[in-house]
Length: 366
Ligand SMILES: Nc1ncnc2c1ncn2[C@@H]1O[C@H](COP(=O)(O)OP(=O)(O)OP(=O)(O)O)[C@@H](O)[C@H]1O
Image (cartoon, rainbow, N blue to C red; front, side, top):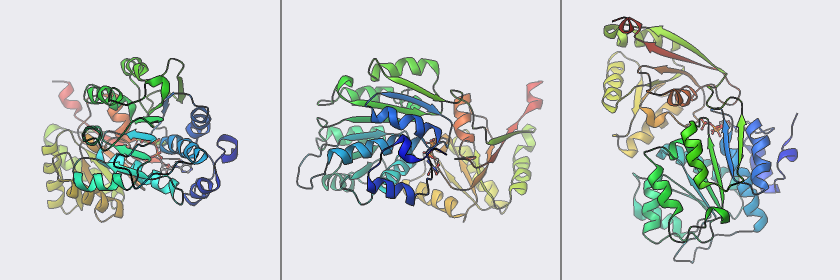
């Protein structure tokens, strides 16, 4: 058995918080990734969904901050975080922030989270109370930096979670703007860490622009591979019976937590309404819902009040919800990486799960 002490020399408070989390030994990406980060190297890490990548970057960073003895000052007009973590969705960055808070509990390191859909005034007040680890979605992060409340001169770590998503066409301009912001240390003077379960080759090449020349690429398992603990099944459907066949599938899953992925926001509303009419306790999450509704939906799903969550790809990446046993791809995603992330919402950290995809095979013969 590999114990924590062999991969990470953690200080007392961190050790205590890791034990409280029930982490008995590091997962492979933690075992190999933590020493690389602790040695000060830039890293592009790839490991399957649910393999513990969040702690793999949080623990060595927090450990280093503890060694250096940082303390956020409540008295500065400008906060100068040592760490910036970016992730593509509000729910995911909030989850990372909660993890950072959990591990930093009882230390003088203060994480803060910023994302759209919550009041900017509230966010700024939170930042001004002191901020060492700033977690944000790109839009709100750039907004806050633009308002002059954040100084970047002390920044030592830049973490891109779901790095391939953060560097794809949608977010790449914001990431370039972030690293080009006034005061942002050049890549030679900061440590840049990237994590994902998938890395298309073009993105790997582009990512090198953000990393030092001698960065390390860590791959645990097959790059872009689906989680091996998820059993994948195909359900053959016809165009007109698809909804009824979804109901059939949900009969077999009963009250076990199930995420149903669809392509569009409209479709998400439509399917959720249909399932509610059919007396299946269902909630939904997508980008057109109010932030309050999104949080309520996740809360109801987490608590089991609504065991079925209909979602667009906004919920495909990173979300770590206990006891999700089934994924149903009602609509297939348009690329394999998105599929890998969707089915990775189950079968996390040693648990098993099932993923069904509804495939309209008859259409293929037309
Ligand atoms: N060493 C450990 N021992 C036990 N559980 C762990 C350990 N490390 C992480 N976990 C738990 O495993 C789950 C998955 O971790 P995490 O969310 O970091 O995965 P991930 O690799 O980032 O997944 P994704 O690619 O989907 O974002 C979480 O519930 C986390 O608390």
